[in-house]
Amino acid sequence: MMVSPRPETGSNPEAAAEYVERLTAFEARIARGEKIEPRDWMPDEYRRQLIRMISQHAHSEIVGMLPEGGWITRAPSLRRKLVLLAKVQDEAGHGQYLYHAAETLGATREEMIEALLAGRAKYSSIFNYPAAAWADVGVIGWFVDSAAILNQTMLARSSYGPYARAMVRICAEENFHRKQGMEIVLRLTQGTASQQTMVQEAVNRWWWPTLMMFGPRDADSPNTPMLVRWGVKTRTNDELRQDFVDQTVPEAQAMGLTLPDPELRFDAQAGRWIFGTIDWDEFWKVVKGNGPCNEERILARRQAHDDGAWVRAALQAYGTRQEQAA
Amino acid sequence: MTDSQLPRYEIFIVERPGRPPTYAGSVHASDDELAMLNARDVFARRPDCHGLWAFRAETISSRTADEALSAFEETEPAPRERYLVFGKLGHKGVPTFLGAVEASDPDEAVGRGRSLYGQDVVLWWVAPERCRLATAAEDAGPMFEPAKGKPFRDQAFYPVETLMRQLRRARTHKQERS
Image (cartoon, rainbow over all chains, first blue to last red; front, side):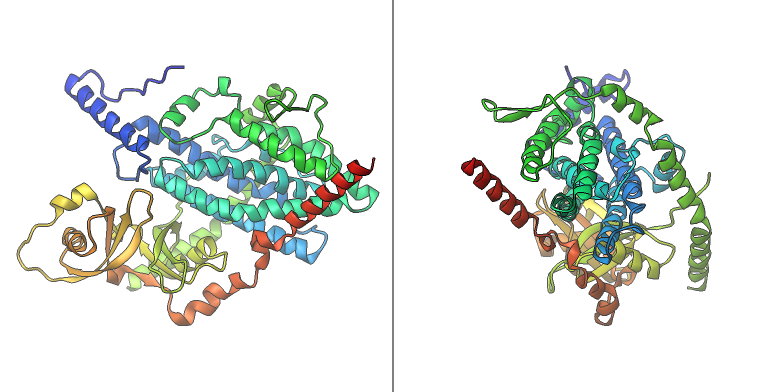
């Protein structure tokens, strides 16, 4: 596909020439590996795409607290409860880093949160699936956080400085999320027969949704060429999805777990795992708001927001009084 | 729906004792005290935070390297105050505290910063020192100690690599015997 950055100049030839000059300088900066900072000139489309991606990423962290959050009170030991609390708290923090990065582009926190609560904003499709059993908490850490680390390690090289720096911080913390999940899964695979069944069932539930989490096929991702050209992304959805499969299949084999894909086989020549066809109808259904938990997730966020209204009102009143006293 | 997410504060953290504060991101808060507590919750969940600075976002002035070239003109003597100067060193750097200067306005502060701290800075930030909130030595306990008691936030806490190695070894062994 040809990429033609949208001109932002109307029909004024002088403005058009100046735009081309600025765009050329901007692309040369990216080619040199420089980071673009908030006050630097950037094409409107670069800003628009980044606000879209970063706010969706922030919402994903916030909604991502919900599937696992329900297991905090039901964690099987105090140790597991502490770990899960810390993980969910990290996700709240990651949402804050990302909302901050989007704010540097001119988006406001109020607009972003309103869009999420109104159901207009997108977030990662994976969080619209339920965490049905305790083993799901382990498998989410192993699959979903591994997938997130692959995506975010790529984004840590992004051309936009504040986004790249947020990713560096997040990746360092998410290795804990992946490891705690793998530890739960490992212990369950070595446990009783019913624990082994529970963890295998959780693997069966989360495998395909995790593959979908990388987003549509490259052929169906119209934004990808522009995002790659401007250094926002350095790898495509399909490349990252393949990396995840190649990393995860040997881990599952070592743990004695099977993956729910009869077509899964190793291509020795390419050194890669070939996997079956993703159910894209299911993917689009979930993205468009009709997954198993979309409605529940938004209702939970709205309720949390409404329940916190009196706290925000009190804080604001106190803040105003402090300012008046000063 | 009308809602306010409250004023924004820019946060700097000291990641190693004795190192200058570096820019971490922002938080929203209704007053200075809560800004520091929110900054702790967002940026000091792990033990590698030894100090926090916060500024109301609008108190920081920012100049690109090009703007800094033309910014500073000697003008009529005016009342001066201390400005804290931050610079992003190189294109991959993070805004980092460089030092303090006396200046009558942000442009003068950037100009003085430029002559003191050199040419490698690609982005300048300055803010009056009176606008800075900072953790004091006696705050270190309540602010930073809690993160030290949570080793499970570190990936090294989980013996996953060892367990995986054992499993792989056991598998190879079984395959060799069959």
